[in-house]
Length: 405
Image (cartoon, rainbow, N blue to C red; front, side, top):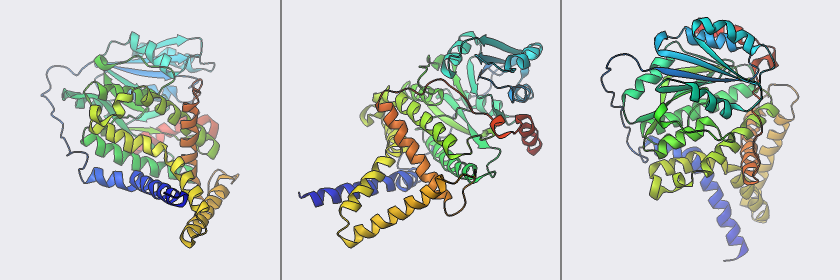
């Protein structure tokens, strides 16, 4: 074939791949191509609720740690069947001073003077935990009152190994960035709900998820718990499910392009590294529908920036033809609009900059995150960005959240 034919094939393949990621896969999921919905088989409750251990890794969380712990202590889950363990990861603020007085209410604190990273702290806390169900939750999110009950109820099905909650943003309407991220979160939640119903879910929300103690796997400090553990559960022959009624609400502090980019690059690089560490899960002949779901939901989506580059380069190279010249011009206009949005100094974007800017931001993060992983670079130490960067009190947000329930 001639070079022109090869370029045309590459252009068409890239367009089809992106169409599949954003439209084809969701449609095939909904139509049942990846399997029918499988209802849970909940066994009758016998005796007391299972003992759960709530694991919280905390690094400089003084702004919200008390509200978080009060929120957990007010949960509808039986207090005597719940232990709360906080690991202070080299905190240099008042985090430990705030947690200490709550020991009388059953909150355990383990102090680690050296900053080790989230996964390392989680490993240490799990070693000290006594529950048969391990619940992982972030220090900056608030749970709906029945969230723990909703999570644990799913484990009455012996096929269930991990249950993830549904994340939500308290400040979804604050800026264009938080609004667009909330729209993306709604889309992602819908995908996970469809995958959960069909037994091919392979990811969790780091803000809230629970796993059987028997399926716990020691975490590599360079991978994320909310992807490494669901992958391990899936590979072990158990199901991951989404509990849509277990809500974990967070104040999204990444409301600038640079902050959102850093967050997403870190997530992509850690998740991509976790997936590459278990290549068997990408083999459809070994992992079946789970592998197809991972390729469709994760791998191909992370490769969208490469498809975008291929589409742009081929359309420009073939621009002697009117159709490709028009396509190249449309792409140039789209990227100029996106760049204008990204260069806005104000926190919020303004239409028409918002959607193109957010789209390009997400795909730039995917490009940088995958390249970072290919180059063997890690994400460095865990440094959470919290609400104090906006001058907003997490306590105030918690009050608003609880009033809304």
